[in-house]
Length: 298
Image 1: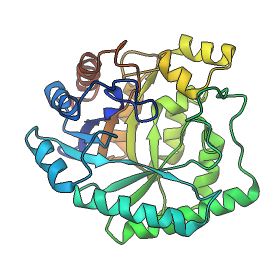
Image 2: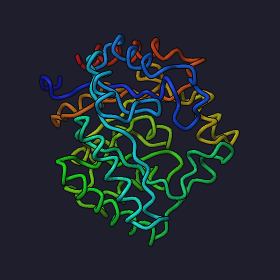
Image 3: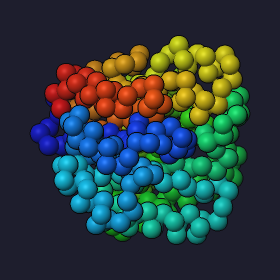
Image 4: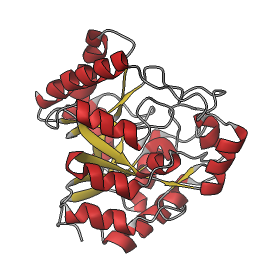
């Protein structure tokens, strides 16, 4: 289905230890996390809060297990802080990822975001950007994209629940306001389904801009509870709104076919934040790996 060696498969460490809620998986070590990733058959990882920030130390630990770094999350504050502040932090992040061999930098705007607020209802309080905020975001992302290009890297924007770029319409507006050579798109199946969008439709519209893919599934009955009980994003994670591909309701066969038809090249990253006390990370990593192999041949 996919060209040989064009697509690599990674998994995010958030299934082992949650960056936003460190109490979830607090006893799971960095070494356990990456060892189980390799055991489950993955080739790479994104960067979690327990990972060494020394490129030498991190590279050594990964090489022992045959793993690479696909990318890492970067929080931008372009709508609420001076551009220079975000750019300085971005360059340090970029340089670390460059040393680790990553080709893309995951960026999400966190200005007025509610995704990290434990008691703020996810849907009722979703931020909506003003015209001035949209302009600041687009201009700032363009600047960050040019900084990424200095190292031969691409900025991939992560639409995310609880932020100002969550819906299909908001993704489309961001793509219209930015230049393709400066801002690419991270396609996240789970966040789109959670937002009430059809992931396949969004994929079809923005396929030429997509340079990074997060594979995530949702449990629809839990999402309905989030809506009914006005839960926050973090509460939604705790009660199991997300799961790995093949364990929820998203049909990935057509998504893989569409990506293959466009000769997608890059990383697929399984990312399903769950409470590891309730969803054993290794078990779910193996489940995801088998499902993806069966559907795509990867």
